[in-house]
Amino acid sequence: MGMTDVLIVGAGPTGLVLACDLARRGTAVRIVDRSPAPPRTSRAKGPNARSLEILDGLGVAEEVLAAGSAPLPMVKYRDRLPVAETDPWADSAPSPDAPYDRGRLIAQWRLEEILRDRLAGYGVRVELGREVTGLAEGPGGRHVDVMFAEGRTERARYVVGCDGAHSSVRKLLGIGFEGTTAEDQVMVCGDVDLADGALDRTRWHQWFDEDGAVMLCPIPGTRTGWWFQAGPERDGRGRPLAPTADGFRRLLARHTALAGRALTRAELLSTYRVNVRMADRFRAGRVFLAGDAAHVHAVAGGLGMNTGIQDAFNLGWKLGLVLAGHAGAKLLDTYEEERLPVAARTLDLTSERLRATLEAIRRPGGGLDAAITPDTTGLGVGYRWSSLARGHADTVRQIGDGLPDAPQAGDRAPDAPCVNALTGARTRLHRVFAGPHTTVLGFGPGSAAVLREVAASYGDAGVRTCRVYAAHEDRAASSPGTAVVDDEGHAAAAYGTGASDGRGTGTLVVVRPDHHLGLSAPADDARSGHACLRRLHGSERFSGIGGRRP
Ligand SMILES: Cc1cc2nc3c(=O)[nH]c(=O)nc-3n(C[C@H](O)[C@H](O)[C@H](O)COP(=O)(O)OP(=O)(O)OC[C@H]3O[C@@H](n4cnc5c(N)ncnc54)[C@H](O)[C@@H]3O)c2cc1C
Image (cartoon, rainbow, N blue to C red; front, side, top):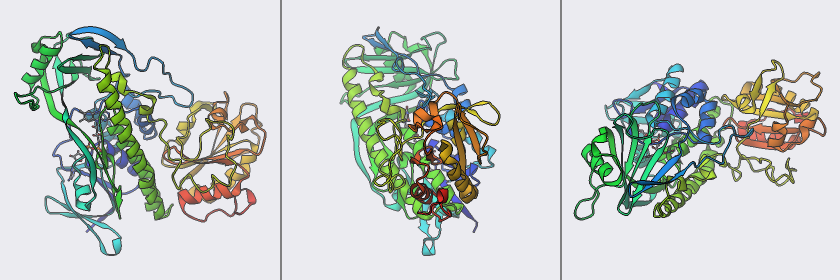
């Protein structure tokens, strides 16, 4: 029996992001889905700002931006009449440290298509029509045997269940999925076509009245396609009726100024119930859970797919490094340590956003904008509590002390526009981070020795260095790896270093492959630099950062 490194169960957005991340590292990965054809459901409306950064890191952001559209202003109607228009992003703008300040509207199936194409570019194809029905740990816990409905068994070093809310993998592991299902909070959804010109396609239309709601948002990339969401029709005993095209027409006629016949086609119909549940563990031995398999919550805030994408990006590099022998297996413990608290917080946040939205739509002018807060961009998610961030915090002077906004270990690594010191081309720090590697940034002349040491000791373990020069700093001395010029001071400001003015000891910033900080410390602090890279890469490679052995 052949053995693969990672077998991913489920080719939704979570599984596909994980597969792309692993495949680009050269990890032997397979991805299976029980669906006989690529799944096409009417679900998420697109990546949030943080997911766009991840997609950028995976090299597909341009395609996603081209296939999608900007989030739309919302028109709210009461008793069929427009009463308010809101642009939830009116006060938001891209900034040097966060070029994506908002998400992008794109159908989930279209995003999946882009990710599948990317994956195919690495020579990996989704194995369709393959349903996982059993799991067994091999002798000594060295691999997992995965049983399929068609009777075959495959062997993998690690298995990741990205198989959605009803996850077979989770059930096979006996992992609980505690929480609640709100039987009364029901929505019917589908992709529909409206007669050409029936509604303004530059707006997301939302009708609310005493006994119902209909929401219609144009689907980017289509001429007449719309996402339809509505409170369901109910039978005489108040039970929700199953969605049908005729039912959608009746809902249109009842709650909107459109005639029912304006709806010319309806497909991918489904009934959505608010489930708020999460797995009590995200890992059992060599098997992990990610995405909806690990957590489900209210759609308010649009975080379901996004949290899955971000789970995958947290797990991918850890599996990749361990399988390549560049990190110890202990690194894998930090997946649950970091992502389970994020999932718990997301359950709370989305429940709170749902409550706020239900409250808002009782008033004329209220709408889905009530679900959107800065939290829902995902840019603020970090892992300060993680053991990958701890360990040096108590003993080491934190760079940016006294600067409340300076990022700390665990936080998302800010972006910054800068210039490639070699070519003079404009670039950004996130371009420098993009790829499967860890990046060590060195600010100030005092960081030069450290960067040389890191390059020599960790260069073959997936660690790259980048010297960040201040605009007027002498660049005569050569530095290993990439070098950029912080010509407008955005990098120094974003990292709170103050050191790219060319003075001081310099600063060392370790950026994990998922663009979170492992460390920000003075460059002459050998102990912290060493400890951080050991935490990430799990080996004793340094002869002594900057000449001092911890
Ligand atoms: C109406 C609606 C609106 C939504 N809106 C948003 C939004 O705006 N923003 C957002 O972020 N999220 C949104 N979501 C949530 C989002 O769709 C999900 O969170 C997302 O699909 C989860 O992705 P996933 O890859 O984890 O799981 P899924 O997309 O569910 O994929 C799981 C895959 O696993 C496969 N599978 C299952 N069992 C097996 C098995 N035994 N063997 C092999 N394969 C298996 C399935 O066929 C499926 O393809 C919405 C959901 C709904 C229903």
